[in-house]
Image (cartoon, rainbow, N blue to C red; front, side, top):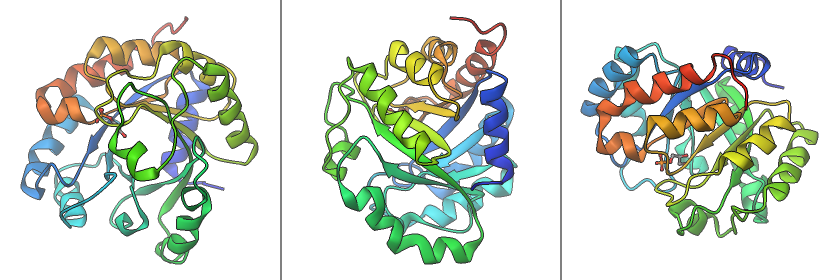
Length: 254
Ligand code: 1GP
């Protein structure tokens, strides 16, 4: 059971029907030196979380990136790892991902067994995450690397049943991801159905480029919207994206 501050804050967002915003940094695409600038932009925009990780890391600079960010910012840093090798105790929390949309036992339990001793010893806040890949119209790195089939984008009922199963298993949050660089982000219809039928916080990401889309996702029920690619292309977008997530929480109705 996660009892850390980050998870408690996420549960408060869900209870209060509010939303927040997370920036995703891929340590393969950003240098430790650039993390300083990113941290300042995140501070100015009151970003809620920095997620860090990638499906495949070619360069080993994860810890250096986290340290540079933390030197400039108090925003919590949350690991979003593509594999157990991306674990580091330098972060504030870990999304302990189970790929519940797939049927690859290695990503449901195998890699967790491998990483468990290190994670237990670290004392890091662990957020057990039901990770659901949703078809985003292109094969993304994560769907290729995980050797798993995403949930069809037009089958919200499958998404709801998958989320229910994860909730019944005691997962702490749901993360619906169309995959980095997705052509089609997760639909508001699917977000709304999953959010309305579950009681745990909901993250949504993949292929989101505009404040309007962040706003629509939050109105539909996302508690945290995650953006990576669009910010890599234009870091100045951060402020408008973060503001859109907050604005959606006011008088939220669908
Ligand atoms: C991917 O949800 C994240 O895992 C973010 O996707 O890079 O397309 O914003 P983008």
